[in-house]
Amino acid sequence: MTLGVTLARGGSKGLPGKNIRDLNGKPLIAWTIEAAKASRMINRYVVSTEDPEIAAVAKEYGAEIDVRPSYLAEDHVNRWEVLKYLSDRFGFERLVLLQPTSPVRPKGFIDDCIMEFINKGADHLATGYMFHDGPYSEIQGRNRQEINPFFVDDGNVYIWRRVMIENDIRYGGKVIEHENSRKASIDINDGFDFWIAGKVLEDASL
Image 1 (cartoon, rainbow, N blue to C red):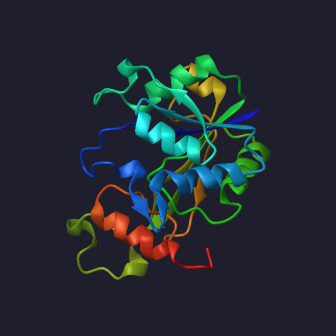
Image 2: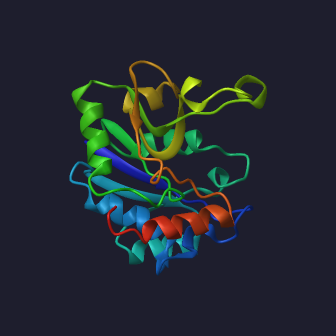
Image 3: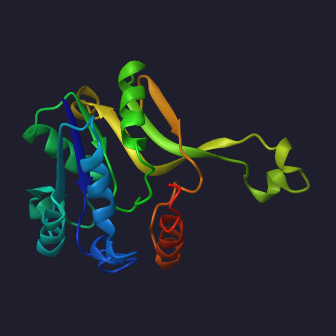
């Protein structure tokens, strides 16, 4: 069984009300909910939140809500603690984390990630893009093609086998770096990211 999860805590500091802020005619979180519900490989999908407003919006768009305990909604709590909590509550073989701050997901992208994860017997998968850059002191005066690219985690899709979460192994075993297009690798942290995402989502070719 594949469990899809979106973690959506209230009280964003960088961009207040971020998860339910309007993005091209619908709340930000709705883009992720719709992508998850369109997946044929996700068997069950839940939105974990402690915020009543986020829960109401997520439910409006058809998501199952798992009410997060208040002690897991404090500023110092990281997502891994919440995933471990969810692993105790739900049965699954693999967990797919879909962050609400990554609204751009081409049709079929989630299922492509899950299929690769299964077919290659992976323990962990992360999406991202190849980045041709580096510290100024290392790249100054060099042509772009001379710089070795490296993989940048874009936060769009993460997958773990259940045993990884239960044993607190965040990164290890057989890891797949699934390349995403640069255009779809948007992770919203501020108003500029929000504006960029809106422009990308206007592109009907996605």
